[in-house]
Length: 312
Image 1 (cartoon, rainbow, N blue to C red):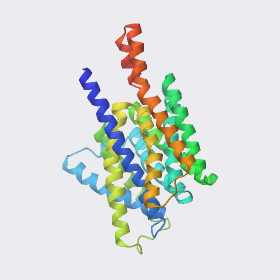
Image 2 (tube, rainbow, N blue to C red; image 1 turned 30 degrees about the horizontal axis):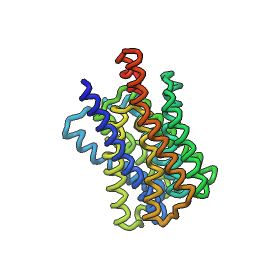
Image 3 (spheres, rainbow, N blue to C red; image 1 turned 30 degrees about the vertical axis):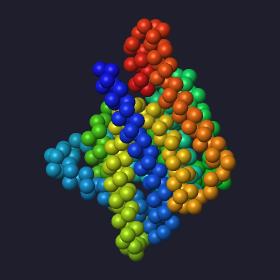
Image 4 (tube, rainbow, N blue to C red; image 1 turned 90 degrees about the horizontal axis):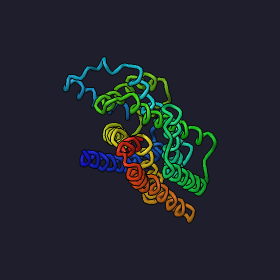
Protein backbone atom coordinates (compact mmCIF):
# COMPACT_ATOMS: atom_id res chain seq x y z
CA UNK A 1 0.00 0.00 0.00
CA UNK A 2 2.81 2.37 0.90
CA UNK A 3 4.59 1.67 -2.40
CA UNK A 4 1.36 2.37 -4.30
CA UNK A 5 0.88 5.69 -2.53
CA UNK A 6 4.53 6.62 -3.18
CA UNK A 7 4.16 5.71 -6.88
CA UNK A 8 1.01 7.84 -7.14
CA UNK A 9 2.79 10.82 -5.56
CA UNK A 10 5.83 10.52 -7.83
CA UNK A 11 3.79 10.12 -11.02
CA UNK A 12 1.49 12.94 -9.92
CA UNK A 13 4.52 15.17 -9.41
CA UNK A 14 5.98 14.25 -12.82
CA UNK A 15 2.62 14.95 -14.48
CA UNK A 16 2.52 18.32 -12.74
CA UNK A 17 6.03 19.20 -13.93
CA UNK A 18 5.14 18.20 -17.50
CA UNK A 19 2.10 20.43 -17.22
CA UNK A 20 4.34 23.31 -16.10
CA UNK A 21 6.50 23.00 -19.21
CA UNK A 22 3.52 22.78 -21.55
CA UNK A 23 1.64 25.71 -19.99
CA UNK A 24 4.75 27.87 -19.93
CA UNK A 25 5.21 27.17 -23.62
CA UNK A 26 1.52 27.88 -24.19
CA UNK A 27 1.93 31.42 -22.82
CA UNK A 28 4.83 32.10 -25.21
CA UNK A 29 3.16 30.58 -28.28
CA UNK A 30 -0.16 32.30 -27.53
CA UNK A 31 1.56 35.67 -27.13
CA UNK A 32 3.41 35.08 -30.40
CA UNK A 33 0.18 34.14 -32.19
CA UNK A 34 -1.77 37.13 -30.86
CA UNK A 35 0.96 39.50 -32.04
CA UNK A 36 0.43 38.35 -35.61
CA UNK A 37 -2.65 37.65 -37.72
CA UNK A 38 -4.92 35.60 -35.46
CA UNK A 39 -7.36 37.15 -33.00
CA UNK A 40 -8.12 35.91 -29.48
CA UNK A 41 -11.24 34.22 -30.84
CA UNK A 42 -9.31 32.56 -33.69
CA UNK A 43 -6.75 31.05 -31.30
CA UNK A 44 -9.56 29.83 -29.04
CA UNK A 45 -11.61 28.45 -31.92
CA UNK A 46 -8.67 26.63 -33.54
CA UNK A 47 -7.84 25.10 -30.17
CA UNK A 48 -11.32 23.74 -29.47
CA UNK A 49 -12.14 22.61 -33.02
CA UNK A 50 -8.85 20.68 -33.32
CA UNK A 51 -9.15 19.04 -29.91
CA UNK A 52 -12.88 18.42 -30.33
CA UNK A 53 -12.44 16.52 -33.61
CA UNK A 54 -9.69 14.33 -32.16
CA UNK A 55 -11.60 13.33 -29.02
CA UNK A 56 -14.82 12.83 -31.01
CA UNK A 57 -13.05 10.23 -33.16
CA UNK A 58 -11.66 8.59 -30.00
CA UNK A 59 -15.08 8.61 -28.32
CA UNK A 60 -16.71 6.94 -31.33
CA UNK A 61 -13.98 4.32 -31.68
CA UNK A 62 -14.05 3.52 -27.95
CA UNK A 63 -17.87 3.49 -28.01
CA UNK A 64 -18.06 6.06 -25.23
CA UNK A 65 -21.55 7.33 -24.44
CA UNK A 66 -21.43 10.97 -25.54
CA UNK A 67 -24.92 11.58 -24.17
CA UNK A 68 -23.67 10.68 -20.68
CA UNK A 69 -21.22 13.60 -20.81
CA UNK A 70 -23.93 16.23 -20.76
CA UNK A 71 -24.57 16.48 -17.04
CA UNK A 72 -24.41 19.73 -15.04
CA UNK A 73 -21.14 18.94 -13.17
CA UNK A 74 -19.33 17.84 -16.35
CA UNK A 75 -20.54 20.84 -18.36
CA UNK A 76 -19.60 23.32 -15.61
CA UNK A 77 -16.11 21.79 -15.19
CA UNK A 78 -15.58 21.68 -18.95
CA UNK A 79 -16.53 25.32 -19.53
CA UNK A 80 -14.43 26.52 -16.58
CA UNK A 81 -11.38 24.64 -17.83
CA UNK A 82 -12.12 25.54 -21.44
CA UNK A 83 -13.94 28.59 -22.78
CA UNK A 84 -13.97 30.68 -19.60
CA UNK A 85 -10.30 30.06 -18.78
CA UNK A 86 -8.93 30.30 -22.33
CA UNK A 87 -10.82 33.43 -23.38
CA UNK A 88 -10.10 35.30 -20.15
CA UNK A 89 -6.40 34.39 -20.16
CA UNK A 90 -5.92 35.27 -23.84
CA UNK A 91 -7.64 38.64 -23.43
CA UNK A 92 -5.42 39.35 -20.42
CA UNK A 93 -2.36 38.16 -22.34
CA UNK A 94 -3.22 40.51 -25.19
CA UNK A 95 -3.14 43.45 -22.73
CA UNK A 96 -0.07 42.31 -20.80
CA UNK A 97 3.23 40.51 -21.37
CA UNK A 98 4.04 36.81 -21.09
CA UNK A 99 5.73 37.06 -17.68
CA UNK A 100 2.78 38.88 -16.08
CA UNK A 101 0.34 36.31 -17.44
CA UNK A 102 2.29 33.45 -15.90
CA UNK A 103 2.65 35.37 -12.64
CA UNK A 104 -0.98 36.38 -12.12
CA UNK A 105 -2.73 33.22 -13.26
CA UNK A 106 -0.45 30.52 -11.90
CA UNK A 107 0.84 32.47 -8.91
CA UNK A 108 -2.70 33.07 -7.65
CA UNK A 109 -3.86 29.55 -8.52
CA UNK A 110 -2.83 27.79 -5.26
CA UNK A 111 -4.32 30.62 -3.20
CA UNK A 112 -7.63 30.48 -5.05
CA UNK A 113 -7.73 26.69 -4.82
CA UNK A 114 -7.09 26.85 -1.07
CA UNK A 115 -9.84 29.47 -0.66
CA UNK A 116 -12.35 27.43 -2.70
CA UNK A 117 -11.53 24.24 -0.79
CA UNK A 118 -11.96 26.08 2.53
CA UNK A 119 -15.32 27.63 1.55
CA UNK A 120 -16.65 24.48 -0.10
CA UNK A 121 -15.28 21.69 2.11
CA UNK A 122 -14.09 23.60 5.22
CA UNK A 123 -10.61 22.10 4.84
CA UNK A 124 -7.79 24.17 6.32
CA UNK A 125 -4.14 24.18 5.29
CA UNK A 126 -1.41 23.24 7.73
CA UNK A 127 1.25 25.72 8.86
CA UNK A 128 3.80 24.70 6.23
CA UNK A 129 1.22 25.17 3.48
CA UNK A 130 0.28 28.63 4.78
CA UNK A 131 3.95 29.69 4.76
CA UNK A 132 4.45 28.27 1.28
CA UNK A 133 1.37 29.95 -0.19
CA UNK A 134 2.32 33.27 1.43
CA UNK A 135 5.85 33.16 0.00
CA UNK A 136 4.51 32.24 -3.43
CA UNK A 137 2.17 35.24 -3.26
CA UNK A 138 5.05 37.55 -2.27
CA UNK A 139 7.25 36.17 -5.05
CA UNK A 140 4.59 36.64 -7.69
CA UNK A 141 3.84 40.20 -6.53
CA UNK A 142 7.57 40.97 -6.86
CA UNK A 143 7.68 39.41 -10.31
CA UNK A 144 4.52 41.19 -11.41
CA UNK A 145 5.79 44.63 -10.36
CA UNK A 146 9.26 44.00 -11.79
CA UNK A 147 7.88 43.66 -15.32
CA UNK A 148 6.15 47.01 -15.23
CA UNK A 149 2.79 45.74 -14.10
CA UNK A 150 -0.33 45.55 -16.23
CA UNK A 151 -3.51 47.49 -16.72
CA UNK A 152 -6.41 46.96 -14.31
CA UNK A 153 -8.38 45.40 -17.16
CA UNK A 154 -5.61 42.88 -17.86
CA UNK A 155 -5.31 42.08 -14.14
CA UNK A 156 -9.05 41.44 -13.82
CA UNK A 157 -9.17 39.19 -16.90
CA UNK A 158 -6.20 37.15 -15.68
CA UNK A 159 -7.71 36.78 -12.20
CA UNK A 160 -10.97 35.59 -13.79
CA UNK A 161 -8.93 33.02 -15.72
CA UNK A 162 -7.20 31.92 -12.51
CA UNK A 163 -10.52 31.53 -10.70
CA UNK A 164 -11.99 29.49 -13.57
CA UNK A 165 -9.13 26.99 -13.60
CA UNK A 166 -9.04 26.89 -9.78
CA UNK A 167 -12.75 26.08 -9.63
CA UNK A 168 -12.24 23.32 -12.19
CA UNK A 169 -9.32 21.91 -10.19
CA UNK A 170 -11.39 21.66 -7.02
CA UNK A 171 -14.81 20.76 -8.44
CA UNK A 172 -13.67 17.88 -10.66
CA UNK A 173 -12.14 16.23 -7.58
CA UNK A 174 -15.09 17.00 -5.28
CA UNK A 175 -17.60 15.75 -7.86
CA UNK A 176 -15.50 12.66 -8.55
CA UNK A 177 -15.09 13.06 -12.32
CA UNK A 178 -12.79 10.39 -13.74
CA UNK A 179 -9.88 11.02 -16.07
CA UNK A 180 -11.44 9.54 -19.22
CA UNK A 181 -14.63 11.57 -18.80
CA UNK A 182 -12.71 14.83 -18.43
CA UNK A 183 -10.40 14.06 -21.35
CA UNK A 184 -13.35 13.59 -23.71
CA UNK A 185 -15.80 16.11 -22.25
CA UNK A 186 -13.61 19.24 -22.03
CA UNK A 187 -12.58 19.47 -25.72
CA UNK A 188 -15.92 18.22 -27.06
CA UNK A 189 -18.23 20.40 -24.94
CA UNK A 190 -16.14 23.51 -25.55
CA UNK A 191 -16.03 22.87 -29.30
CA UNK A 192 -19.83 22.57 -29.36
CA UNK A 193 -20.25 25.63 -27.13
CA UNK A 194 -17.71 28.02 -28.64
CA UNK A 195 -17.75 27.26 -32.39
CA UNK A 196 -21.20 28.81 -33.05
CA UNK A 197 -20.19 31.89 -31.02
CA UNK A 198 -16.89 32.16 -32.93
CA UNK A 199 -18.85 32.69 -36.17
CA UNK A 200 -20.13 36.06 -34.90
CA UNK A 201 -16.83 37.28 -33.40
CA UNK A 202 -14.01 39.25 -35.12
CA UNK A 203 -11.82 36.82 -37.05
CA UNK A 204 -8.80 36.82 -39.37
CA UNK A 205 -8.76 33.06 -39.86
CA UNK A 206 -9.44 33.32 -43.61
CA UNK A 207 -6.42 35.58 -44.24
CA UNK A 208 -3.99 34.20 -41.64
CA UNK A 209 -0.89 32.29 -42.89
CA UNK A 210 -1.37 28.52 -42.89
CA UNK A 211 1.75 27.90 -40.78
CA UNK A 212 0.36 30.08 -37.96
CA UNK A 213 -2.94 28.20 -37.98
CA UNK A 214 -1.19 24.80 -38.02
CA UNK A 215 1.15 25.77 -35.17
CA UNK A 216 -1.74 26.97 -33.00
CA UNK A 217 -3.80 23.93 -33.93
CA UNK A 218 -1.08 21.45 -32.97
CA UNK A 219 0.07 23.16 -29.77
CA UNK A 220 -3.28 24.53 -28.57
CA UNK A 221 -5.48 21.69 -29.79
CA UNK A 222 -3.28 18.67 -29.10
CA UNK A 223 -0.41 19.51 -26.74
CA UNK A 224 -2.39 21.82 -24.41
CA UNK A 225 -5.99 20.62 -24.74
CA UNK A 226 -5.23 16.89 -24.63
CA UNK A 227 -1.74 16.18 -23.26
CA UNK A 228 -1.65 19.02 -20.70
CA UNK A 229 -5.26 18.35 -19.68
CA UNK A 230 -4.36 14.71 -19.05
CA UNK A 231 -1.33 15.75 -16.98
CA UNK A 232 -3.33 18.30 -14.99
CA UNK A 233 -6.24 15.97 -14.24
CA UNK A 234 -3.89 13.10 -13.33
CA UNK A 235 -1.85 15.37 -11.05
CA UNK A 236 -4.99 16.67 -9.30
CA UNK A 237 -6.28 13.11 -8.77
CA UNK A 238 -2.98 11.92 -7.30
CA UNK A 239 -1.85 14.98 -5.33
CA UNK A 240 -5.00 17.02 -4.64
CA UNK A 241 -6.07 20.38 -6.06
CA UNK A 242 -3.97 22.63 -3.79
CA UNK A 243 -0.78 20.58 -4.21
CA UNK A 244 -1.18 20.43 -7.99
CA UNK A 245 -1.88 24.17 -8.08
CA UNK A 246 1.26 24.83 -6.04
CA UNK A 247 3.37 23.00 -8.62
CA UNK A 248 1.84 25.34 -11.21
CA UNK A 249 3.45 28.23 -9.32
CA UNK A 250 6.60 27.21 -11.21
CA UNK A 251 5.00 28.44 -14.44
CA UNK A 252 5.91 32.13 -13.82
CA UNK A 253 9.55 31.16 -13.37
CA UNK A 254 9.67 29.01 -16.49
CA UNK A 255 7.66 31.62 -18.41
CA UNK A 256 10.19 34.34 -17.57
CA UNK A 257 13.05 32.12 -18.76
CA UNK A 258 11.25 31.28 -22.01
CA UNK A 259 10.28 34.92 -22.50
CA UNK A 260 13.95 35.89 -22.15
CA UNK A 261 14.92 33.31 -24.78
CA UNK A 262 12.13 33.70 -27.35
CA UNK A 263 10.62 37.16 -26.69
CA UNK A 264 13.84 38.92 -25.66
CA UNK A 265 12.54 39.93 -22.23
CA UNK A 266 15.26 41.20 -19.88
CA UNK A 267 15.90 39.57 -16.47
CA UNK A 268 16.08 42.11 -13.63
CA UNK A 269 17.38 41.74 -10.08
CA UNK A 270 13.82 41.88 -8.75
CA UNK A 271 12.84 39.02 -11.08
CA UNK A 272 15.78 36.96 -9.81
CA UNK A 273 14.83 37.59 -6.16
CA UNK A 274 11.20 36.69 -6.86
CA UNK A 275 12.30 33.38 -8.41
CA UNK A 276 14.31 32.52 -5.30
CA UNK A 277 11.40 33.43 -2.99
CA UNK A 278 8.96 31.42 -5.11
CA UNK A 279 11.28 28.39 -5.09
CA UNK A 280 11.59 28.59 -1.29
CA UNK A 281 7.80 28.89 -0.99
CA UNK A 282 7.31 25.75 -3.05
CA UNK A 283 9.92 23.97 -0.91
CA UNK A 284 8.06 25.00 2.26
CA UNK A 285 4.76 23.74 0.89
CA UNK A 286 5.87 20.52 -0.79
CA UNK A 287 9.04 19.73 1.13
CA UNK A 288 8.06 20.41 4.76
CA UNK A 289 4.55 18.98 4.47
CA UNK A 290 5.54 15.25 4.31
CA UNK A 291 7.98 15.76 7.21
CA UNK A 292 5.32 17.45 9.38
CA UNK A 293 2.79 14.72 8.53
CA UNK A 294 5.31 12.01 9.46
CA UNK A 295 6.22 13.82 12.70
CA UNK A 296 2.58 14.29 13.68
CA UNK A 297 1.62 10.69 12.91
CA UNK A 298 4.58 9.33 14.92
CA UNK A 299 3.79 11.52 17.91
CA UNK A 300 0.21 10.36 18.06
CA UNK A 301 0.88 6.85 16.78
CA UNK A 302 -2.03 7.22 14.42
CA UNK A 303 -1.29 6.48 10.74
CA UNK A 304 -4.73 7.76 9.75
CA UNK A 305 -3.54 11.31 10.34
CA UNK A 306 -1.08 11.04 7.48
CA UNK A 307 -3.74 9.62 5.20
CA UNK A 308 -6.14 12.42 6.05
CA UNK A 309 -3.54 15.16 5.51
CA UNK A 310 -2.23 13.71 2.24
CA UNK A 311 -5.67 14.06 0.61
CA UNK A 312 -5.45 17.86 0.76
